[in-house]
Image (cartoon, rainbow, N blue to C red; front, side):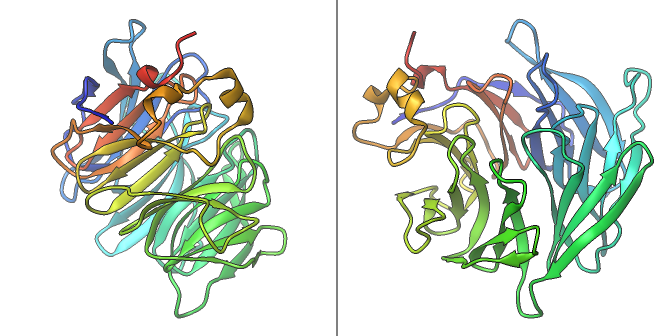
Length: 350
């Protein structure tokens, strides 16, 4: 394992923050959106881009957001649209926003739609990750809602919803990139797979204290979970009783996990130990990538942990690979520090 960090730091976030995400719809730039979490100040959404020289992160736009941002997801097919989940004291909500076209001249966001059908605390919004889709999923503590969204008329309608029952709590989830009708939802200590056509769930994966989940972008049925005490686990949904691979995770809680969008053997995790770890999965991985030797296996014969990035002084909650340039990722620690790192040292030199 290699340690340390030589990342590019963005210091523009003035307040505490948890959310950073890749702007997938921006085909011309390596871009991220980050949102703040201040109790007393006016919160902000920053549009952050890697400079053309690739040497610095610059603030391309700064926009005011009325409440604390707990979840932020860019629209996969419109780079000016994104969703947030927010709280203000005891109140909570979710909305879809649009960045103004002339955003150099204004800091005001346009609220396209308020997702206001929730009766309990909203946890996250899910967009189908791979392209244009007029559906959206919102998850609150007790319900899963499927929405039809029309941004042009600013209308959002709930198509269907399902409750998980009085004694259960939902906390997050992920939408299967291979199947628009399948999501994985985190419910208590289990992972539930839902069919959106019937709003029924299949046999859950029972395990401990899941914090995050992410599907493999290249292989169907494969996903990874981040767990408080047992680190990371890779699962094949066709054989849900036992994980296909396990990684130790972090010295404290493992909070976030992300597959690389192109080199799917590479997995990032972040935790409350102020570190980001880069792992190499042996049991999965796109066979073409293996055959082409895209990942340098010489560095991983003994240890699945390729690198631990420790350029932080606070817990790391936000992780985002760049889909435009999958050799880099951005991470966000709770003190508002954004760091961009390159994984090129772990890729086979062509």
